[in-house]
Structures are given as structure tokens and as C-alpha cells.
Length: 391
Image (tube, rainbow, N blue to C red):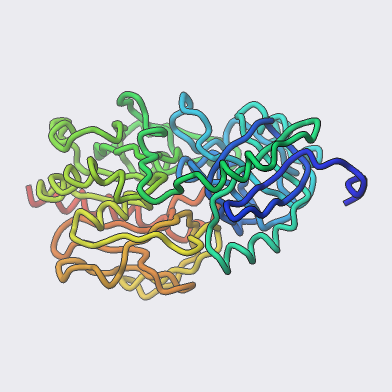
């Protein structure tokens, strides 16, 4: 890159095996430890960096130009603005340029600084992605110092000492502190976000790291939403008399969060209330129904993941972000596999036979990503309608 050849590196990515990758700092200064993954999306970097599901991770963007449309106040996905940014850092190929977009309200570098996100530019992200594909997602330290002074040995020790994502409950760090209501609907060209003024259903959403656009999509199809913290009990949820319960996405190991969440999800399943889960919610629902989860080699992170829906026999392009998965071979006979990843054959959806309970591993709300899977929100509404008629 022009001007970089003789420059002193001001940022480092230090992998747990001792590998040191030099680059040039952006965003906040400091040191952070996390798991390095790669994301193949070409757009939506602001939504990605504010997705609570990335808590504990350092994101390598495979698309080389990140930050060139700036940042704005509308594309933030975390619903808990009081929580610190969950993502530990980001890795980029090209330097951040001045924003060029009519929606830009802030320079991307200034936005990173304001959110406390450490970034490194000038990295061969193709080589790093190939390393992750070959060896798996490494633990690492990302460091940015304006003067380029680092204690490299200390950074190597910190990277090697981090325990990693297995056994880590991160939902408690990103969930809301208290319950709240939501009625904002999806963004429309020329109108922005709207309001649901005539809801037909009341949905309680359990926040394990909830994205705003999931709430918007549920509001758009006619739901009034009450969001509750991750530790809310099934009894407390059912006392609110919901027409349906949504189990949200989120970060970390589903088995760790499931220690307190899975017993409550089992009670919700037994209650007969319609249940819809996404991402971490899908994994914990799988655990509640008797399946097992496991850590993935490189995970799925991007907006171009093909998934086959066995219930419609259609293939949809989806947005994914997960490092754990439900083991499809562990699904009990009472559970039907509804979706599968066409990249690697891993499970991408399930439903409980004969009951209004289903979930998917991907993000049907997009933001960023394709909109092929918006039908799932309508499917949830239809289940609530059917359940109401039987009552």
C-alpha cells in the first residue's frame, strides 16, 4: 500500500501459536483478546460489528474495502446500547478512506474509536483466511499503539493463555438489564423505520444478544414485543400471557449459556406456547429437545450461505454468524431437520414434530444480508394463529 512500505507498524495481531502479523492501527488504541474468524460479506460492516453474536471475536473481513461508506445511527444492530461493544476487534486489508455515501453520519475510523473497537489494516486477509480454513479459528490478541511500541512476548503469552470460546457464557454480558417493549417496524425506502400500531400478537423475546432487526421484522408481521433478560424464568415469561416466545441469537457456547437457559426453554416447550429460535436460540432449543452441540472448525460467517429448506424444497441464500452448531446426527426421533447448509451439510433448522416449535441456525432478518428467509417470521405468525384457534 502507498506510504506503508517504510512505516513503523502500529498494530499487531498475535496468534496463540506465537505468529505475529504486523499492520497499521485504526480505531481505538489498546489490547484485546478474542477468537479470530473471517466474514465473507461484501456489505454491512457496521451491522456486523454491532451484532452481539460476535462478542468475544476478532473479525477478519475478506472484502478488502471496509469503511468506505462511513457509519450512521440507523445501522446499529445491538439492542442493548448500555453494553460495551461485544466484538473484540477487526482485521482489514485496505486503509480506511473518507466516507462516500449519502447516509454517512460519521467517519468509520472515528466510529471505531467511539465504540472502543481496535482495528488493524494492511493485513493479507486472504492468507489469514486460508490459515483459519486450514487450522481453525485461532485465539489471538489484537493490539494498537500509536507509537508502535509493543511488548511482543507479553502479547504472545496473553494470546496463548486465553481459554477460548468453549465453555464461555457471553450472553450475560450482552443481554438487557431489564424488560422493555418494542414496536418499531422494518426500514422502508423514503420512510425510514415505522411503528406497529395495530398488533395482533404479543411475543416475549428472550434476549441472549438480540439484534434490532429481528425485533423489527417481528413487529412488521403484527407483533407487540416484550423483551426480557436472558435469565428470565419460564414462569415469569408465561405470566405475561404471550401468544409466542422468541429465543434470540447471541454469542458464546450454547452449552454454557444453556446451564441456566435450557431448563427454562424445556418448560416453555412443555407449555405448548409457539416457540421460534434463531442462532444461539436454535442451538439451545436443540439442547432442550435432546440434541447435542459442538464447536465448529471455522464457523459460518457471511451473507452468502446457501441453505436448503426441506419443507419447501427451495434453496435460500442466508446470512450466518456462528461458531457452534447442532449435531444433526444427535437429533432425536421427535425432532425433524428442516434446513441444512449446502456448504458443509451441517444442520441449519429443526422443528418439534406435532408441536408449534421451530428454529433456524441462520439470520432470516438479514441486516446485513439477503432477504430470502423473511418468510420464517410469517411462519411464526401462522403458528400463533393456529394455536389461538385451538385454545
